Image (tube, rainbow, N blue to C red; front, side, top):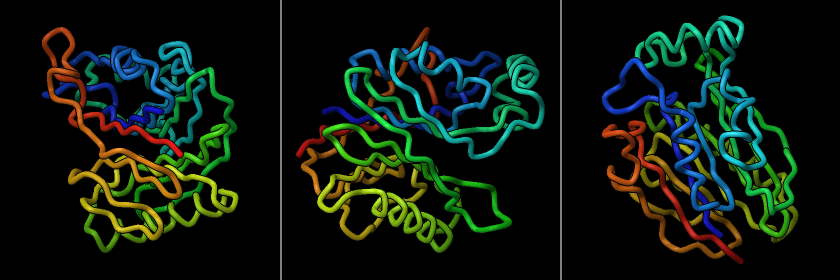
Length: 229
């Protein structure tokens, strides 16, 4: 079972341009029909479009709401996507599940401390797979990020039945996270961690794999991992 995670950078390219490429990102990352895709930095206006653009079951949790009504925020952001980003449109985490798999939204919780920018973990149970968590931790020092990751772990573990596999993916903003019960993975800040399940080593996409119309999509590369029991 192929699992992917991608911080989509609000649909921006590297370097950012006026135009956003979010739809192209969704189509690209789901082209091979991975079982699970976890996304971070999704603009709130795009959430109703995720299922149609990707051909999946789409679940999401808003981390920061838009400052203007969604349609207005989307229109203003499109004037210069690379400049406005989430300033008006807000941002959310999303989990996409292949339509051949049964899935149930399990909700989410805030993992950041009060007074800091709101960061969340969101979970979905996937039939015959287990509990899948998606997070975007604070871009901060390890002393701030590590407690956020521990809150996410506790939330996901509490949702799982004894022995049920757990997958915790997302933008951790931390290299080499150490979470009890979860094996460590690659050296970057984007991770797919697995507990009580088999997983092959993760891989990251090369820039050419996420290049569209001559532009590299997002400032993060998708990471992916084959996961099983």
